[in-house]
Amino acid sequence: MKLHNCKNYEEMSQLGAELVHAEVEINPDLLFCAASGNSPAGLYELMVEKHLDTPGFFEWMNVIKLDEWVGLSKDSTFTSEYDIQEKLVKKLEIKDDRYISFDVETDDPESECDRIQDKIVEFAGIDICILGIGINGHIALNEPSEFLQPDCHVANLHPVTLASGMIEKVGIPLTQGMTMGVGNIMSSKMVILFITGNGKKQALDLLLEGKIRTDLPASLLWLHPNAHVIVDRKSVH
Image (tube, rainbow, N blue to C red):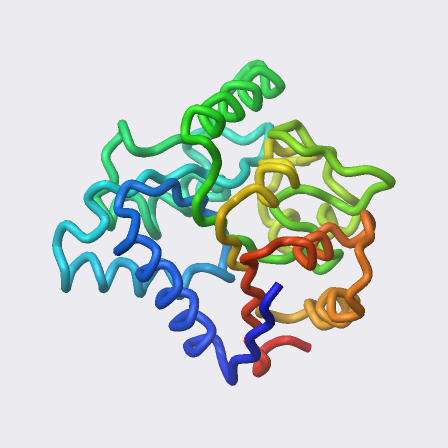
């Protein structure tokens, strides 16, 4: 795991973009796993700028969605789908045959996770996996637990996650999500974890202890041969 301390959000995003663009240049049809939320939003803006400056740069890239809440409608602006579509997929003009996504309104989340897992296997794994970190140290929706699951699965949301301000704004009770497993993340050829925003300092401090622990899922990245943890030092407190 490589730790990068950046002075602010812009520098953090720029470093992430440099890493992503270098990989896409080498492997244009790679599988890019996109996280929702504010942490990677700056990266996505820079990817869109690259697309506008160099048309065709992302023409062959495949995108897969990292996770999705269970229980929202497809019209909800709180879905990961809405976030990733608006910030990345539409703006990069990623065609439907190059986009893989958990179905927001699936009646069978377990089967939907199996379907996404099969897609990952078809691609022989993820090439670049983008992550944020939860205030409790979760990555994707792999929550602190006595054990962690390797493959795509339905996750029960942790009380700390449920108490987050974003969840409260949804307006309906959420208890589960569909998510990549830690095995999917750890087998990715490159992982980029952005750490930015209020409430993240404790998770960062625990991560920097270097101890591998299932109650801090992000700590598994110490075992990854090509993981970049990029910290926005200005906002993490």
